[in-house]
Amino acid sequence: MDNFYYHNKTVLITGGAQGIGLGMALAFAQAGANVVLTDKDKEAGQQAEQWLQGQSLKVAFIPCDVSQETEVQALMQQVGEKYKCIDALINNAGIADPFQGPLQELDVAAFDKVLAVNLRGPLLCAKYALPLLQEAEHPAILNISSTRAFMSEPETFAYSASKGGLEALTHSLAVSLSRERVRVNAIAPGWIETGNWKRASEKYTPQHTQEDKEQHPVGRVGEPQDIAEAALFLCSDKAGFITGQSLTIDGGMTVKMIYA
Picture (tube, helix red, strand yellow):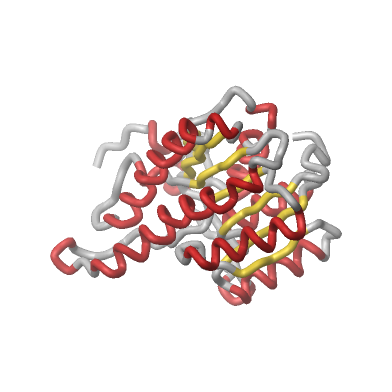
């Protein structure tokens, strides 16, 4: 993407304080965007804001729990008052730990919480961002899904279900919002290493075995920048003929046949 392609454009990234979200925030800000990053974790959000602003990037942090309708409404009101429109909404916030234990011991409340953040959250954000998206010239929504929408390890009920639902929500929104000129796509990341992209107290130096790397045909584990580069394209008018699609970015891991 050209430097400053997103100059004077506003990009809202949920779950933007750490991991893939922070990687995307950096990339969009470096491309000239006004980046609004939101996160439930206020400490991580403030750290991210300070780090990015320290690089003379246009970034603002607004705390928000996307599972709470009133908080999403308040978020969009603040964004509208300051920026007037949203050019790209990136629904990235999610509960990332996929494992919930045996089915017979499933905590239904915990299951519901994951779906509230990972699936209802993107719907609420799309709903209340729509008036601001309509004010943009080439508005786009990008949902960050997961390869776990298509394949599972044992006991990942809520995470897999929420990401599968997000894939379906993507094409439903794409069709429904076509008359509003809003394109909607998804990225399904595979194994993305975020150790260097966490809040200060949780950062760690990634250690990957050769076996880890060889699970991927490209020969390495993914990084947040891998997702950010695709996001820059899909949210731009260069992708103007793409909507309702999901792009798997996993280094080829899900197409490699593995024998136990």
